[in-house]
Image (cartoon, rainbow, N blue to C red; front, side, top):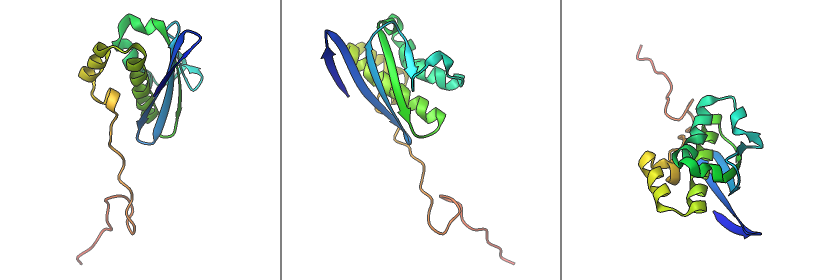
Amino acid sequence: MSSQEASGHKIVVSSGKRKTSVAVATIKPGKGRVWVNNVPLEVIPIEMARNKILEPLLLIGDLRNAIDVKVRVRGGGWMSQAEATRIAIARGIVEYFGLEEIKRIYKDYDRHMLSGDPRQTEPEKWGRISARRRWQKSYR
């Protein structure tokens, strides 16, 4: 995460990961607009993913109208990308406003919003069909 002062405006860049998805969010002063991969959030067709991305913005109330968020996300599936985006936005907002109250709200709502979720898929083992499945055996 990094922040810089550019001509009197604060800009914060933060990242989030979930499974194999990586999201990088840029937060700057604005009117409350959100873009994911240069597409407005309202246009994203999957409602479940849209709601997941909106969670950190809805939790801070009227402060969301003071910032614009642009997110670039790559890898994984659509839900994994949505959760990585949510983590990046939440971390960026905490750094942008610098309020402990926002951090506490996020932790009380969902502890993985700031820390991430360490679970990964188990790798497939050699000589098997999948990670845990073994060959069928017959006794007769």
